[in-house]
Amino acid sequence: MSGPEPWWTDAVVYQVYPRSFADGNGDGVGDLAGLRQHLDHIADLGVDVIWLSPVYRSPQADNGYDISDYEDIDPLFGTIDEFDALLVEVHRRGMKLVMDLVVNHSSDQHPWFRAAKLSRACPKHDWYIWRDPVDGHEPNEWRAAFGGPAWSWDPGTGQYYLHMFTPQQPDLNWDNPDLRAAVYAMMNGWLDRGVDGFRMDVINHIAKDPASLSDGSAGYVMQPRIHDHLQEMHERVFAGRDALLTVGEMPGVTVADAALFTDPERRELDMVFQFEHVGLDHGPDTKFDNRPFDLPALKTSLARWQTGLAESGWNSLYLANHDQPRPVSRFGAAAVAAAAGFDADPFTLRYESATLLATVLHLHRGTPYVYQGDEIGMVNAGFERIEDYRDIESLNWFRGAVGRGTSIPDALDALAFRSRDNARTPIPWDDSAPAGGFSAVTPWIGMGQGWPSITVAADRAAGDRSVFDHHRRLIDLRHASRTVRLGEFELLEPDHPSLWAFTRTLVDESEPPLVVVANLSSSVVMLPAAIGSRLETLVLGNLGRPEVADELRPWEARVHEFGPA
Ligand code: TEU
Image (cartoon, rainbow, N blue to C red; front, side, top):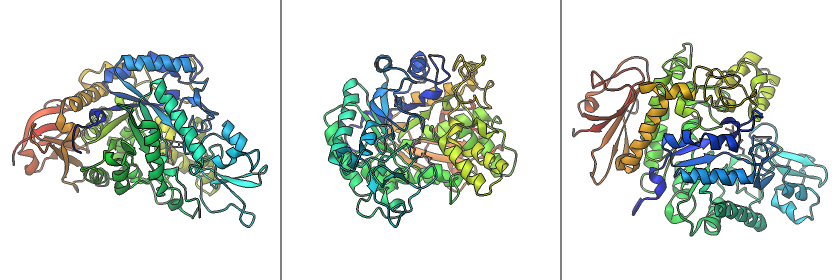
C-alpha cells in the first residue's frame, strides 16, 4: 500500500443483527428504536463503524436476507423516519453506518419477481434467471445452500427459476443492464440519504455462467464478469464519494482473487470477507459434520491471508458473525477440551478465552469486525430441542439429516455446535425477567444458556475481568499505533499446538515492533527462548502483569514490544 492510507485502515467495525439487539416496541423482536436506545454501548466500545444487518421490507424467510422492497424499512424494525433519526444519532457519536446490500437475490415477494412471473414477455422476466426444463427436469444439478435443488418450477411461465438459497430468494440476473441500473439507483439513494457504505451479501455469486450454467460451484462463483460488475458499480455508485466502506462477502474466495478485488488500482472493493478459516472445522460434505478445533490450521490459514494481501489489498478480520457459532465456544477453552475428548463446558475460562481470541484477532493486519455479543464473551445458545431453533438453514438441515437416518440426538448435537442460531440469541442487557432487558415480552428466540449469568451489566461491572473493557483497550491500541494498523505480519512457531505467536513490524522502524503471544491451553506454556528473551514493555494483556515474563498462564494473551535478537 503506497501513499496516505485509507481511513478504514485503522477502523474497527461492530456488526448489529437488529432482530437480536434490543426490542424498543415490545413485540419480542429487536428493532431500530431499541438500537437507538443502546447506541452508547457501541460508542463506548470505541468502534468507528456500525454494520447493520438487513432492516429492509422482507417476508423474513431468511431473517431479512430476502428483501421485498430495497427502499423501505420493514415495519418489524420501524419506519424510514426512525432510520433517519438513527443515522443522525450514529453520526452525532462520530461513527459511520454501513448497510447490508443483498443483491444476489431478492425476495420472491419483491414486485420485480412478481412481474417477472407474469409472462416470459414481461421486461422484468429477464431480471431473474430462468431455464426451460431439460428432459422434464431441472436444467442442472445445482443445489441450494439451504437444501434441495437450486431450481424451482414456476407453472405460470413453464420454467424453472434459479435460487442459490431458499426458493423464497430468487437470484437476480446481473447480465441484464436494466437490473444493474436499478440496483445502482437504489444504492445511490441510500448513500444520498447519508449511509456510509455497504456490506455486500454473497457478492461473488452475482456473475453466473450464462452460457452453460455448468455443474458445480465453478458456474456461479468467481465468474470473470464479477470484476466487470464490481468495476461498473464502483464507477456508477462510489466514484467521487468520500470516506465510504465497501466489503464484499465472498464464500470460496481465494487469496489471489481477494488481491484483485481489493487492489485499490482496480476500483472494485475496499475489502472482502473470506471463508477459509471458518471452514476449517467443517466436514467434507456438510458444515454440520463438525471437526475438532485445530489451532495450527487456524493460525497458518490466517497467516497466509496476511502474507497474501501484504503488498496490495486489505484483509477484513473476523471470527464470528450472524452465520457462525460463538468464538468462545468454537475456539476457546471449551473447544480445546472437546478436541482432546473432554467435556466442553463453555463457561470454563470464558473471560480468558474471549479476551485471548479478541487480542489475537485485533492484532492482525486488517479491519477487525466485532459481532454483537462477542464484546461481552457470549457463548453458543445451548439449545437442546429442535423447537428452540428458528434458522431456516438449521431446520432444513435437521429435517433432511433425520430423514437420511441420522439419530435425533446426533442431529441436535451437530446443531448445538454449528447452527447459525448460536449467534442469534438476544443481547442480554441485564438479568431482569423475562428477557434480560432485551424485551418486555418473550423474545422471538430463547435467551440461550449464557443468560442470566452473562449480561452486559455484569460484564461492565467486572473490573479487570470485563471482556468489554478488554475490547476497548484493543480498539484504542489500534487507533494509537501505526504498528497495529500497518506493520508487517510474521507468524512464529506455526506448528506449536497451543501457542499463537506473531510479530508486527513497521518497515520504516518509526515505532518498535510488537510481538503477540497467546496460550490456547489450560497448562502453562514456556515461551521458546527466541521469543521469551526479547519481550520488552508490556503493551496489553488479558491477565494483568505476569510474574514470570517468559511463561504464559492458561489462556493468557499478551502484547509486548519486541526487542532486538
Ligand atoms: O451468507 C452466505 C453464506 O454463504 C453463508 O454464510 C451461509 O449463511 C451459510 O453459512 C451457508 O451454510 C449470507 C448471509 O450472511 C446469510 O445470513 C444469508 O442467509 C445468506 O447470505 C443468503 O442471503
